[in-house]
Length: 208
Image 1 (cartoon, rainbow, N blue to C red):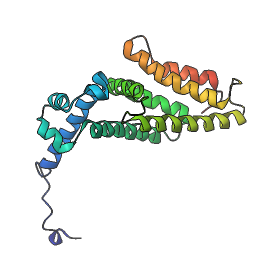
Image 2: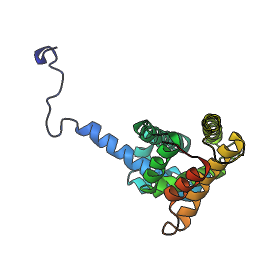
Image 3: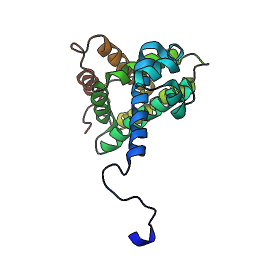
Image 4: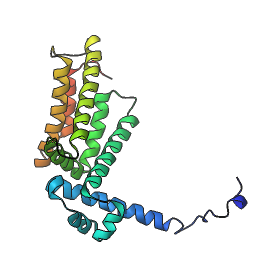
């Protein structure tokens, strides 16, 4: 289609996407404020007023983007999930276990996200928590996927220990969450990726 047939299209150049870019920037500031508020105060402790203040906007401005703290939490968790998926897909040529190390290293560049996950995953054990179903599904799906992977590696003779695939899957998830929790307390002494890689090497042999 020629340019002549679309006269309504704005010309390219500085400022042509100003309103959209500004809105996107404000939204990103809001999400960063949410990560800080939820990771410190938890879902029930954080308020719209607090988040608006951290984002540097009015509460009315915040409500223009998100109606309540529940919608904010869901958006933050969705963004985190998409970021993790993007990293895992980019590492598709590697096996899942070592691809997970890429996620761990990326998480360490965003400590607020690790603290958010640690805080929300703990309080979301309450069935009435807005993130309860999401986190339960996350753990169920991850565990099922890991069980299938360990079963496959076991059938190939690559598993070094005699534990069941379910036990190994639970161990891997517990190590991942537990190491990140320790890292929050003392990042200088806890290398999550190194420790997780040591666990992988202890459990599996000949994994590419």
